[in-house]
Image (tube, rainbow, N blue to C red):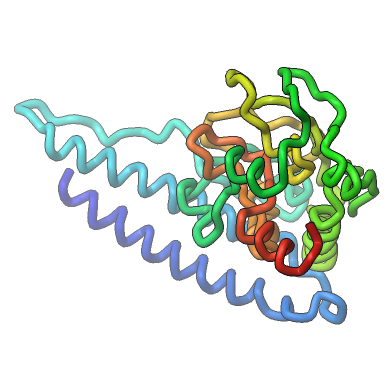
Length: 276
C-alpha cells in the first residue's frame, strides 16, 4: 500500500501541470474585458474538473496514509471515493455542467487575503440596521443605511442592497458576462436584503440585514447548507467575486456556498472614499 502513495502524488503533480496550462490559456485576453472575446466556457469547466480530480486524489492520499499507519496482520483494500470527480463528457454537456454539484476544493483557503466583517464590526461601523430583530425579514429603520438602499436590476438578477454594493456587484457581473456569457445566463438569486437576526441567535445581525450580501445559485437550484459541496458554476463565480473583494460563504465554518458578502477591507475602503 505504501507504493500507492507515490503513484497518487505523481498523478496530482501531472494534474497540477495540466491545470496550470489551462489557467494560462484561459487567462489570455482577460486584462481588457471590453475588447477581448469571451473565454471558452469549456476551458473553464475543464479547469474546475481538474481541481475536482486533485481534491479527490488528496482525499485518497490521506485515507491511504491512515491505513498504512493502522495496518495489522490482514491486508486492507484501497479505499473507494464516494464522491466522483467532475468528468466532462463532451461539448453538449457544457451548459448543464454549471449546475453540477461538486466538492469545494481547498475550502478553507477560498477567502485568503480578505476578511469577513462579522456582526460586531458591522454594527460598530455602520450602526444597527434595526433596533429590534426577529427571525423574520423586516424593514430597515436605520436612516443613514436606508438612504443608501436601492432596488436595482444588476446583470441577470434584481437586488435590494446598499448602493456601493450594487455598483460592485455590477462590476462583477459585467466581467462574468464578458468572459463567460454561458455562465452569466444561468445565474439566479435566492435574495439579498433581509433584516433579521442570525438563525439560532438572539439579536446577532445577519450580513443580509445591512444590504451587503447576496445568495446566488445556478438555474434556481439551491445549494445544500454545510455539506462541503456546491454547484460548479458557483466555484467559477467565486473567482470573480474574490477579485472584487467579496467573501465567499464556502469558506465559513458551516459552509454556505450560495452566500457572497462584502469584505471588511472593502467597507473600510468605501468609508475612506466617502461612499458609506
